[in-house]
Length: 182
Image (cartoon, rainbow, N blue to C red; front, side):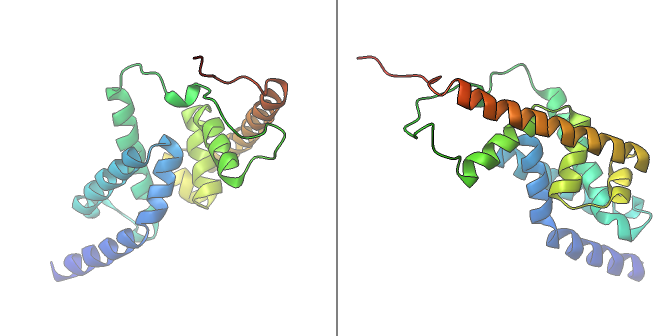
């Protein structure tokens, strides 16, 4: 009992130390700060009460990511068809000829990642954003390492295509915005 309490305390400290990483991952999946925070809280709460089911302490991060992914999937199942405000263009004062700022680039990449299939989005965010090893991703998503590598390759190709298309759309249709009429 004493050993399990010490183990739980150690795992709790380690889990809390990685909370920001989990938040970044959840935000990359959802694009919504509040939802990402809720997912992290749900996943951490479930992890805290389920430490006894973790077989290998070295896989805590991958195990927690799997819990968070399941929380996200549960949330998606509960959602109804909605319209995302990010799908609409609003009037923008920026000169279309100017380069995108780092913030605009990040937003564009997040939007492109959001358009990807869930399996590709999960792999690319875990490897490229969270810097998980292929083995950790394999464990977190419960898929073979070869599948992780092939999905990551396809996801990167798809992301490149989406970003290039987004850039092309911006240069072809720079005036595609809403304007107010008096």
